[in-house]
Image (tube, rainbow, N blue to C red; front, top):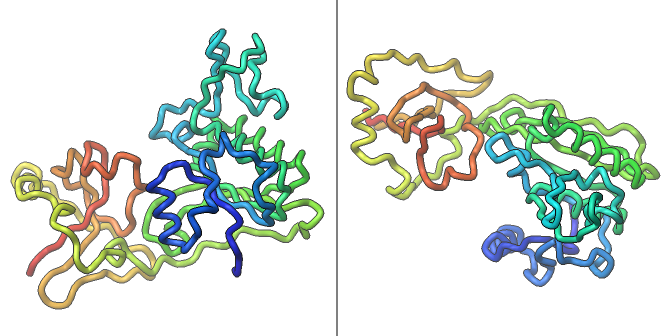
Length: 292
C-alpha cells in the first residue's frame, strides 16, 4: 500500500530513532508524549495504526488494566465508564490529580480517533484484553468506537499461522467508518508455516548470545541427560533445517536459566519484556548447534 506518514507518536528517544531509521521517516513528524499532544492542531490523516501499552493487560504484568486512581481520595475507576469529557475528573471528589496505568493510554488513542475521524484504523493489543478479567473494558472500548461512527471487527491471531515461526497471540481490531464500510471485511485465513525457528537466524552471531560452557555442561550431565526427549513432530510442510555437512541446528525449549532441556520446537515462544536480560527460570526458546 502506497502511503505517506503524517505523524507518529513516541516519547522514547531511542525507540523514535529506531523507527525513523527502519522506516525512513522524518524525525520531525514525531509528536512525542501522546498525553501532552493536542489532537486539534496535528495534521489530518486518513488511516490510523497502533495500539496502547499492554503491560497492565498482559498476564506477564501486574494486570492493573485501564484503572485510574484519584490521588486525592484514593477512588479507583475505569475511565471508559465515564463520558470522555469527564474522564480527567474523579467521579467521587472531582479532583484532577489522577494516577493512570500505562495501559489506560487507550483513551488517548480514542481521543485522536474521535477528533480526526480517519477512514479506518487498526488497533492491536495482547490477547488477555479479551479475557474474562478485562473483557468489560474491551467491550467499552469497542462500544465507544461504535458510538464514534465505526464498525469494529476483531479477532485473536497467532503469528505462527501467518508465516512467522513464533507462538505470539494478539488481538487485532479493524475499525472502519460506517459510511465507508461495505460489510465484507474478513480476517485472512491461516497459511501453512513453511519456516522453522532456525531459518530465522543470522549467519554470524555474537558470542554473547551463546550459553557459557558451564551451562551447556549442566544440560548434558546426568541426571538431566538421562531423561529421553523425543523431538516433536514438525509442523505440516515445515522441513527440518540443517547446515551442510558439518553441523545441524534445532530449536529447543530451555528453563532454569538455560540449564534444563525441555524438548525440541519449531516455533519460538512469545517474547517477554525481560528477555533481553538473558535466560531466566521460565521456559524460553533457544537454538542448539550440534557439530558432527
